[in-house]
Length: 252
Ligand SMILES: Nc1ncnc2c1ncn2[C@@H]1O[C@H](COP(=O)(O)OP(=O)(O)OP(=O)(O)O)[C@@H](O)[C@H]1O
Ligand SMILES: [Mg+2]
Image (cartoon, rainbow, N blue to C red; front, side):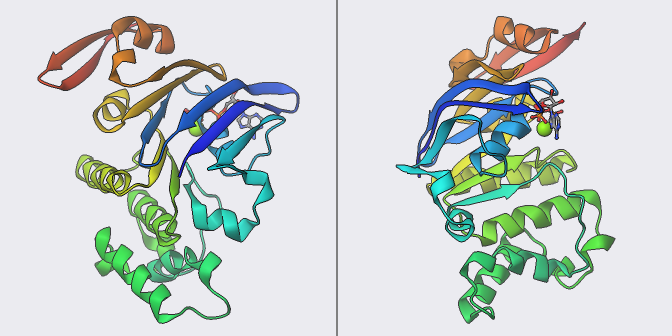
């Protein structure tokens, strides 16, 4: 599914957070949003799924404006994994993942809903946690459950806000490899990332945001010392080995 962002703007109480953003993402693109704290990554992700209503411009998925879709229609196309969630539901892991099926469920889950839920629990290796109280999991385990809930929506577009921030290195790789495989199957992934090295390794496209504007956008060709230094106001060295790129900060 294609996403077309056409000249959008968003302000919080009159203070601009996003200005004149235009981008096009294709089916199966793996897009990393990078940029300093406060540059607008989370705001952009929330505008893409309609949690925030843009003040100017429009977001289209395929040819449809997202604000013309009902919440259920939207939830079948776009799933969102937030940076954090204040409400921690008193439910088992299984029930939370099943909640992802809500847009498809009439009044009780079908066999198909239960099957998808079980498959996703297996995919993310949550079997041993399935009947545990969500509140008793670690922060990283909870993050993986939120990803599972989003996958249960069977979305065409998956938006994730810093999904690996609480994960150990093994779980980071595990989640990113799963996302890469989903992109290969045609799901469009938009992911806000602080770790520029992870962004460069996994993303097919990188969108750099600075002060609410697109600073640079494109493939790996936009990864150079000048762009990274201007984006984060820090000196870096870039090493290349085969097709891998490593960005090492030098200090301020
Ligand atoms: N609820 C809010 N009310 C007012 N201003 C906000 C709100 N949320 C974000 N902002 C402001 O909007 C700007 C963009 O914030 P946003 O959360 O989108 O940045 P971010 O790139 O996701 O940052 P981080 O890397 O720290 O998560 C910042 O200046 C922030 O202070
Ligand atoms: Mg953020």
